[in-house]
Image (cartoon, chains in turn blue, green):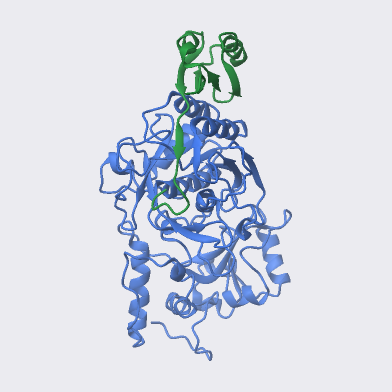
Length: 432
Length: 78
């Protein structure tokens, strides 16, 4: 471990901190241990100089890669700078202490005329030999350092049970590679057809919600299912308090279609009405965690086809009867989602047969109506909004990724799993 | 038993949906919703006239409305 002459014996997350220091600091802090504690500011195109001016205006000592030969700048050169600027890529790295001392936050609303495009936490990265090494790499690194310091005891070795409260993010988001994604779903309309939403839930207080009910009851979710699935698809980047991140498209435009009553009941007619509404409102992603064990229904197939022709992608739960895929997921024009357990094996309840893709569906933590606010549920209903959320992130990357092109991209970018197509489709959905 | 059932009529886009609605009404169908973005019409009719409705130009399918139930809030899987 590199020893730096530093009068402060506490591990720090400075711009100049070495990786070992960062890992130790993260361990000491607990909480979001996959984050280094530092922040990255991405500047808009041609806005790097304005970005540099703004850093200096905030009194940050900034090391600029251009001051070094061939822009080869090493940590030792950076010294005690608060920020490090990489002008070629338009990004500045800011140390944790410098960031927090100025009251900055990754949740800050960015002004339209700001040179900043995005503010995000910096994450650790690890050599990624096989899928799923991300977390193991982190655990191994932390264990090694702790052992060096004679503090090896007490570290969690159990990979099968990932504790979201320790990691700061749900296991499902981790497996879908959501945390390192630069995407937020901004500009993408995501319709969730379900039991509605708790419109007063604090985690959605800063979102503009468009809603409509098709079941003769107010949109307000008194069942819980809809609030949970919307949470997974579009929940906030940083939930209130110390809750782990559980939502994917945190800047997606939420369209709540209440097609199931507060007792969880609906019918094809109410669901079709919701699908029609979502398509009429140009929702690029339509998430449907519902269905029945019935053969293909012509009306759903026609709706799916209309959606695809209009740039919308309908994603539906395969069903939980450990039988063949139910409707609407069994329509050829609708994407069917199977559920996976934490070990990425198909969940025992998950339907099979016509399956396009798979996603986390066991013990999924997300929002539920007040007063509980948060809860854990299992089902292909939980897997479906993981796909919907990732679809919104992919849709954000290009206006060409819509409907069938988006369907194909989700499948081609999925992580391959050692199970048949009939169980997991093309594999585990991945964020861009 | 009810003399009328809720039906879901799926249409092709060969004809304007409003024309199909007119023909359905003339044949005894009571329209509830016209979902023009997805080509569906919901409504009620006595089961006996459904065969006649199916023969209307532009009608691809007529199926009875089916129930969906995701279970109560504390269901084990949903």
